[in-house]
Amino acid sequence: MFTGIVEETGEVAAFERTDEGRKLAVAGSVATVDLSVGDSLAVNGCCLTVSSLEDAKAWFDLLEETIACTSFGSLQAGDRVNLERSLAANGRMGGHFLSGHVDEAAKVTVFERRGENYFLEVEASPESAKYLAPKGSIAIDGVSLTVCEVEGSRFSVWLIPHTLEVTTLGQHKPGDLVNLEFDLLAKYVESILAARS
Image (cartoon, rainbow, N blue to C red):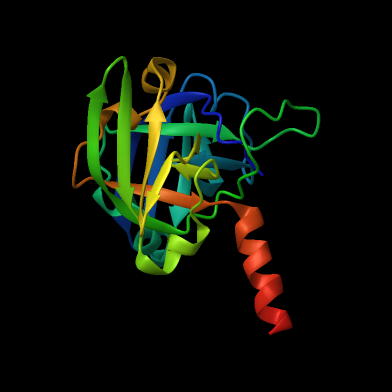
């Protein structure tokens, strides 16, 4: 489990295609320091399992399914990514519960400054609109945020300067893909109601 409170922005150290499949390495100074092989790390909101460690770099094996369901297909060495270690049992719960299972990659439609804050709009798939609610929770690239407006499958969030400083969200422009994880409670309610019908 994760909270959507990003610990640091790390750097893609390598993204390779090998005989064994795709491998991703990320470097960081906080989130990668005390990891062990087998631990989970959220990279842009996607829960990945550490397959090996080298200095301050964590390596991951990526499934084709992971590439297909996330924005990882466009990653390159040098790109910045949001990193969060899994929630410790005695940790603070600052954001909202996240599984690190990305639901889909979606396009940024608007990113602009409005007054003193920044407005970010994303267009989710039409099938996912049912999970969006004003004042509801959403994770964009692993960042816990509050939905402010919903219009069809488009939704928007407001970003404070601190969020832009400590995450990669300020780097996005219209057309970029971001990873979305919708609220767990909404998905469970949907599942329960579907089972009753």
